[in-house]
Length: 167
Image (cartoon, rainbow, N blue to C red; front, side, top):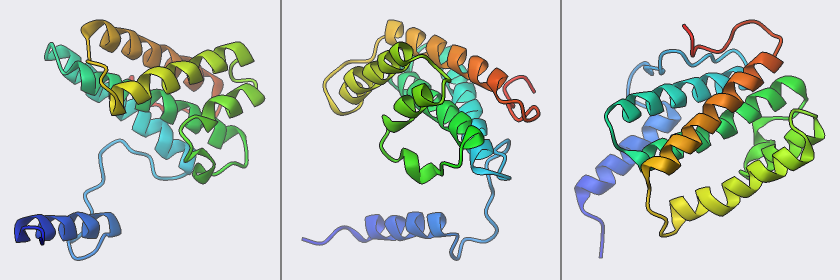
């Protein structure tokens, strides 16, 4: 059985969009700083947090807020590591690697990094792939954690005011 033509057309358009082919000048997301890998990751984290704020204001979308919060936490930690080391984003394709590296670099103590990694592996994975149902409490807790990590990490980066959360 072949896929309906509408699906294959949209699939080709999506592939072209990621390759910047045939769709005109790319309209990059406002606020994403493209000067360096660490800046891209940090400003993505800012935008994820802003998206979570908007969804929280709509009184719901708890699953999306949980996902955005975990993603913001990961991007924020990656931003610090890319700023602080000679690592590249390829070093963090394993979603848990950033937590171990953050402990190695002294961003967090080993216990905190281990707890963050455990929260991610035990709950984010189960939430995303498993049968865990989103709740307001999970949404509130992961969002508060993402905000606190983002604030802490941006204070550790001593390279100008790249964070766009307050702007």
